[in-house]
Amino acid sequence: MVAFIRWLEALGSGHDAVANQAWWAEHEEFPMLAVGFYLCVVFNGPKLMARYPFGPVGKQVLKIMFISWNLALSIFSWMGLYYVMPHLIGTVRSKGVFFTICAAPGEWYTTGKPGFWLEMFIMSKFPELLDTVFLVLQQKKVIFLHWYHHCTVLLFCWQAYIRDAGPGLWYCAMNYSVHAVMYLYYAGMAIPSTKRFVSKLALFITTAQIMQMVVGACVTMSAAYWWLTGSNCHLRQSTCCLGVIMYLSYFGLFVTLFVDKYCICKPCGKTPMGDPCMGEISSDSAGMFRSSTKIDMASAGAPAVELKKDR
Image (cartoon, rainbow, N blue to C red; front, side, top):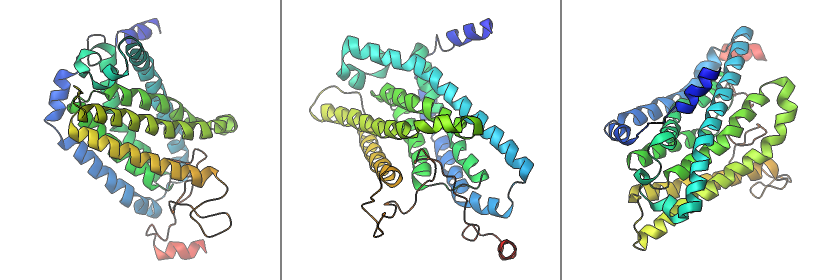
């Protein structure tokens, strides 16, 4: 155990991200292929699972894998947060917000442990696509925000990383902060004995997700403002435009789903209680990424003979 702790402490000590950034810049096929395959799973996986669902043993094994996966992502996020957030806060205090948004990353965070955990954050966007695979295998509905978020985050993080975006550590620290709690919540919600306790975190997580989008949009728009006014801000125009659009779209979608999930009177529907403004809503208590609603087998393309048996 002591040796493992020492290994963790030494992890990333001599890291330098420059060479890896150059390698990823020459291999844009990886994120493109990942997103393409991912969308195939999102739109075709439910049809396959409706035809060939898991039996009781398979469902139990899948549940154990799901809990383990979320616990692993939570631990990973806590570790990243431990090394990234103090570095960001310390630099803000010593050199100011402008420096942490507009300075070249090589001046303060692409080497050592902050640089290592930044790169791990970028790389984690690939395995995080398995979140959706678990939903499909469990025959749960994949809402628009879920797959839109995974696709755009992967592509934006990759684009910002290879273009050496100044505010990169802001994006990284915010994401680690939310994911550390969010994935722990999902693991706890899948365990009957802890579900009653962790369910109380739902509103906090939803609010934290919205605040993440607010801060992300503010950081990116601040960089855009300083860049447009002639300040020396280390941010490409393409990264700036994509960041603003992405964060504002997230904010709108998250707020809309927050209203659908927690507000009694919906502004969009004609019924007394109101219909979901998005036309779909996750029944998950966090209200955003996961749904416990089973897929309609008819719409998923299940054989007619199986539907007759269900009747």
